[in-house]
Image (cartoon, rainbow, N blue to C red):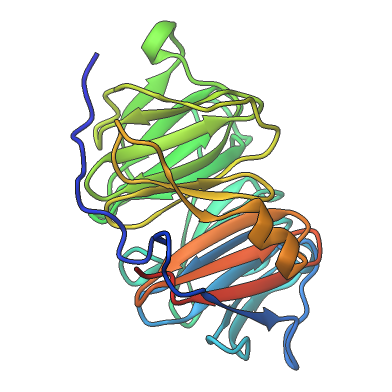
Length: 294
C-alpha cells in the first residue's frame, strides 16, 4: 500500500492551546441575502464566498459582510437555471463549478456567474445523462466526478475529456455511495461514502492509496481543503488533517458550536488570512471565523 507523504507544514490558521480566541461573525442572513436549504459554500481567492442556495435553485456570491455581489439561477433546465444545485467550487482557477443535481449535469461559470459550459456524463447508446453525486477540482484544472449510476469515479482533463476511472471492481478499485470529495494540492483526491468509517485517498491519476480511519461511522461528513491539509467535519466538529500519521487538529469544537448557537454544520471553506467560513444548515446561516492563528 502506498504511503502518503507526511506533510509537516501545519495550517497557519490552526488553533493552538493558549492562542487568542477566534472572532465569529454571522454574515448570513443579511440585509440582502436569505438562504433556503443551502448545501455548499466555497471561498474564492478574490475574497468572495459562493453559495449553493439549493432551496432557492440559485448560486450566489457574497462579500465578507454577506452583501450580494452576483447571482444566477431560478428553477429550470436552461443553462444558468438549476434544479437543486448541491455543490459549488470556486477556490480553483478563475471558474465557478456547480453540480446541478436535478438536471443531472455540472455547469461552469465565470466569477461573475456568466454561463460558460456544461458537462453531462453519457455512455454510448444511452440518451439519459448519468447522475453526478459529488465533485472536486485540482489546481491543474482536472475535474473529478462520482457517477452515481455506474458507481465510478471519473477524472476529466481541463477540456472536459474523460481520462481515467476508478470503480467497477473490487478491493482498492471499488467505490460506492460517494457523497463528499475534496482535492488537496500536495496530497491528491479524498472521498467519503455515506455511512462509512473511512476517508479514501488516491493520487491525481486516481491510483488508490491508504485511507484514513474515522473513530465512528457518520451519516453526514463534509470534506474541504487547504493547499496542504484535508479539512473534514461532522455536524458539530471541524478537523484538519495535515499529517497522515498525526492526530488531526480540531479547528471547531462541539463547545464552539454550542456557544455560537449552530445546529448542524453542512459545509465549510478555508480562505486566506486565517479565515474559515461555515454553513449551518440547521439555521440556513453562514459564519465567518477570523483569527484562527497561533
